[in-house]
Image 1 (cartoon, one colour):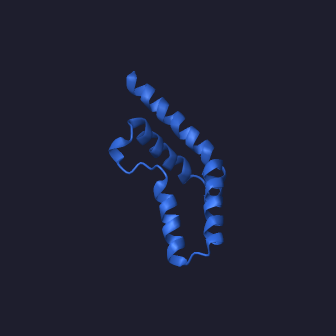
Image 2 (cartoon, rainbow, N blue to C red):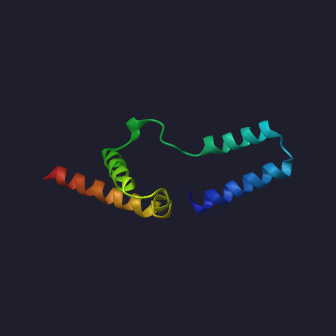
Length: 93
């Protein structure tokens, strides 16, 4: 989660508590926040580079503990895309 998203989430959570909302209202607010975030819902929108990176990331992650995955998530993503780029380069040969 990016710093901006964390700050926005903190603001939303504080607003929820300040409003004295009931459980249903809290659920609706959180649901609205989550749904407003951009996501890829259609696998057809993934590039082959994205697919290669996803597979590489799965392989890298399978060798790590859950705590290591959390700590190194950004480096894992960078490494996965580096592997994907290498695979794409090899396809051109």
